[in-house]
Image (cartoon, rainbow, N blue to C red; front, side):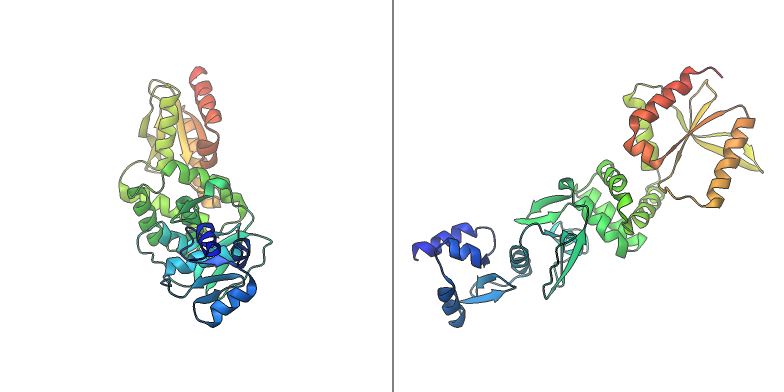
Length: 306
């Protein structure tokens, strides 16, 4: 093998045979030589500036590598293609391949679906199988727009089972990305909320509040305490600090609440006030992203005499 081809092989290591014309030129292989290799059937063109040997098996993974190097950085495998790379349950690597580039890049490739985004933080990307790919958490968030709640629940449970994600990181990224207009986030939150019911325990938000209390060495409150009745129904609060009049409510995953939900919350708060209880309420974002505020407010509530 001539030295120039050895150099090209070294430069394109990990690309499953594919290489760009620029890599070939850097190795000392010019356009006429490449053209001759294509005409003789030893090479085939791929995309706008990529070639690969015809003897290398054209697998789906090899195709994906070729797309990524042909488009050039920054470019990440995303969506269902990223789910297949991460081995999410029920996902296989098939066309059209899904690729993500920053908004403002205008890219088209036959056989690939190109997505754009204003927000691609380093925490949302990684390398897997030699490919730049969206992280498992970012992949879940991106998939949420086109998946049913039941399917999302399966994906979340599978990713947790396989150690691909943690609940804490998933919720932190939801908070960080929710303002960027992602239509899938409300559906993802619904799947999380429904999943808590099927798991039979406290919601993640309630568990997170208890963790904050424990870390701050605040006495553990009693959870799901019945403290009275309203309209013939029991008033059940999320947390009650025993031997005090202080109760705490954590207000679910949704940050947009309907008028009916707000009315119910107001009635509950009024009933607790009339029963001599002080009620602190924390919304999802505060528990996830403002733990210092939550802890300080609880401390203040416990220190204030009734």
